[in-house]
Image 1: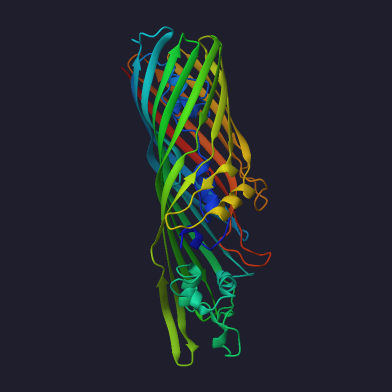
Image 2: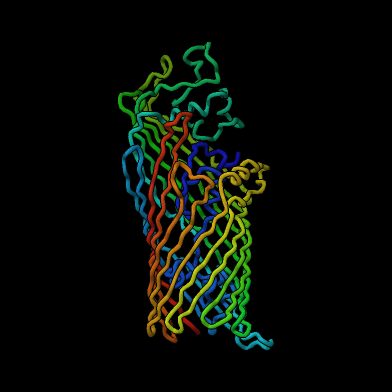
Length: 502
């Protein structure tokens, strides 16, 4: 059984594109397609705008033509720290969670060569760079008293229609949370109550009102190494191309509990762990045209990133009974069960990405620049898995759920002697054709920064503030009262880039 197909607790639960509580293949496709612009503190300080600019290693990722504007070689190093805060509302109770993470989102070595014996070619630059394009380090914590249903109701609905053989090896619910619920006596076949009942119907001895609590931790990142070259033709036309070697490392841990009063069950605990890893490859081609000194136009296209992903899933459940007589003469207290560790492999292709930009220069005082980025999330696609599993249904769901979007970024820089002052704004619109649970999943970010430049070194600092709303369902039942967690997430990212020209 493919692991994500075994994750039956259904819900929409996406953090930014670079963070998620992934519950299905369609959501995973969006998670790994909705990346942020990588780059130096200089570029992040101006909102991530970089398509029409150059002279920064960030061009290796976004528009390699910008490398053609280098006139020296350089090395850079970018450390950062990110502060994530999530405010969750569940059943009229608010819970706050936070997480801080130190990371290295950027490295580069750029080699410039101006000694080229080709007419019109004034120089070329080759760059090796590393960029973090998604960060999955987040925590979500919520709790509340649910007077309408319990996760046990979900287990009963999920099991109904199948005999107990479905929980055995090869059965439809083998190695799922519902099987764990059956093994922990949370649900049982109705024939235990009355042999005349159907063995495809199920019951529970727990009927009280639960206090529900879940902690969800996600870890990891999406990174990319770029090997790019940009050429300068008469300081008017710049052309570049590059290859990107991407990687995904994503891990989530979910600990869900329900506590009961005046019931034979004291509490239950379900823990699920999912890990997804894999390499990917893409290519980027771009150009920048400078018709006059005060203006530049840029354009680039990035192929789909072809990933080969491996995932690993496991779950365990513990229940704490009060010496309950489940069957005549059979008493239960502390029970536990766990699934096998399930591994699977499959390919994923993210959508094409097309970008355009324009930059206006104000003599030696700075610039203003705008980027637009077009991509169609419905074009993400899974290939056949190594175990022969077909993903055609998941691909159809991706087509029906997601839409084409235009991401916008604005930024500017003001120069005063050796100092640089920057600001920017970014907007990523709703990726779904229709809003899920009445919540728009657009993402906005504000940024600012300052830099200091000399002949021998430069240093840039940037602050990026991102914010967006989202929702998550821990499980679904066939009523209008499936529980829903609504949450707001804000991230503050601090970056420092140190560069050494040579």
